[in-house]
Length: 227
Image (cartoon, rainbow, N blue to C red; front, side, top):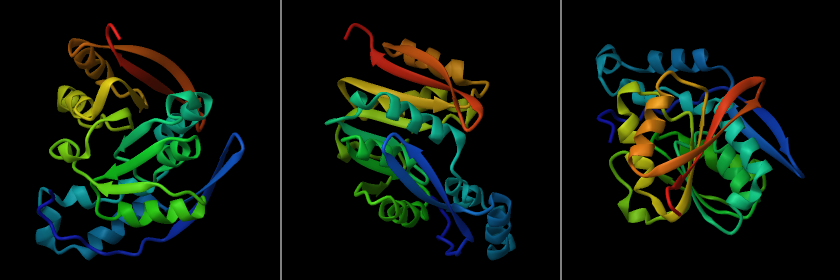
């Protein structure tokens, strides 16, 4: 858990709309990330700015990242992956993939570690007329009490190059036998190390490159070898 106290800031927001299939999703996002980072820096004392946990409070969650759009688009094209399945999203941010999976018939639990995510996620559920569960979670350290899921998914969660194996283990620990892991990634330089780590843990991958928000993204679907 973060060693810093939460800092309450009302960030300027704007509404973004995305239509997938027959459903219009309405997402309230932070208006400008640089502006938001300036606001939180201004709210911190000089001592807080030097705290190693300070970056945990940066509002990166508040942007609709292209990787989340890629994962959402992939779900829309393959609804059978989540329909009537238990689904866990790690690092959900604004929650677009969780909302899509919910609309497609999944029983979804959205999770994130940032203390401000819950308020944004619940607003986006209301904006999109959907009901989805949420829990704050540091998935690399906690979560055994959540149980196991048919599908574990995440978008752009490989942002720490040293932790490919750690991320792989974090995803697998929530997965039911025979379950599916879905990962959307913008093609970071260490994606291949993560895929190798998953392979060594007994998972095979089915990779496709797709376009979301005018950018190429990797969608990787992992299943247990031999299933």
